[in-house]
Amino acid sequence: MKKILGFALLLGTLTAVQAQDLHNADVQQMGQWYNQSLKRDRRGDINVNFRDIRYQNLLSFRTGSLLLNVPIAQRKDTINSADKGYFNVSLGASFDQTNSGFYKGTTGLLGLSYAQPLNKEGLYAAVGFQGTLTTNKYGVSGTFPDQFDQYGPITGAVTTDPLRAGNKYTFVSINAGASLFQTGSTVEWYLGGSVRHLNRPFTENNKLDDFRLNRTASLQGGFTLHADRSSFAGYGVGNWKGRASEVLVGAQYQLLISGDQVPNSGKISNEDQDVSLSLGCAVRLKDAIIPSVGLNYNKTRVALHYDMNSSSIRTSGYIRRGFEFVLTQKF
Image 1 (cartoon, rainbow, N blue to C red):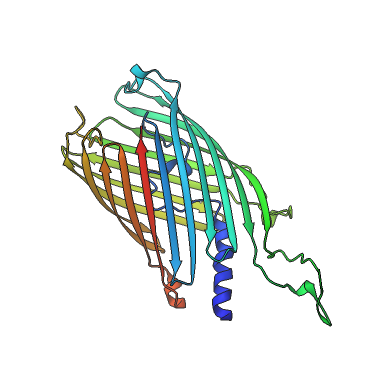
Image 2: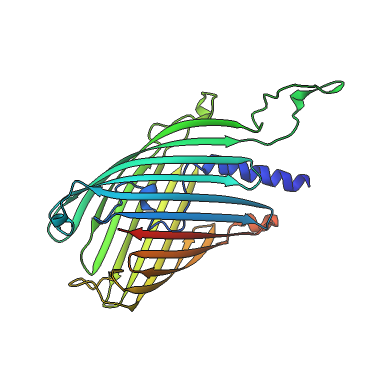
């Protein structure tokens, strides 16, 4: 029992440390969480993501997020114009929590980006900035050592233990990113870089350097090859924070089942009565293999990712499994 409790507390502590950054498998649809400038079209969209990770039914972590993108400052006749720049406003919210109640966190996001065309063939340069407001709440219920004396429990004593239930702190992070991307052709690609937590906020009431959040450096990239009724995409994202790092690479094949292709581009349109199916697989290096399946109908996309642990945590006797559900609606 002590081993199980210790394992749960350790994982809960690691979650509290890492929860300032999302760890989605579907990095293509949730790109603005990593880099505000990665809004690569002029259409509005809303993205909903839910991730559930379980350790052999012992402990689970749940993460949910919502991201709304709203292009602004453009006339209807310039929506599809390749020689006009465009702004995008992003509004987001997310939560993290453990089933044990040791940790709960919420984050709100407000971001603004601008994409400027470099030519009339769909090549853009973009920059973006965002602010996030995060509240972390953690702790366990029970009686702590400072609530005892030599005679036993002290009636009415209030603990000052840092692991007490209800301990919380709120802070603001400033993030910035830039990208270069190509759209509107049979070959699309993007390359971006960002830095999150530029201001290195404190994450505890104790204002020591040990409780300041390290900056997270991130690189993102990907490409899509379009054919008449199919497409193939490759993508990747790398995050580096202090001594920790995370690299995810993946690929996806999409097949148009019914409907028409986009005129003059060969791209799958996902408009009107178009239906397409996608299959993919990603690898989070030294951590997990993540197969996925997705369905696109008109302007709606649903996808499911299954997270299979491949890390050394297997040697501790605990097996990790998880899934991630994604819903995207364009407008």
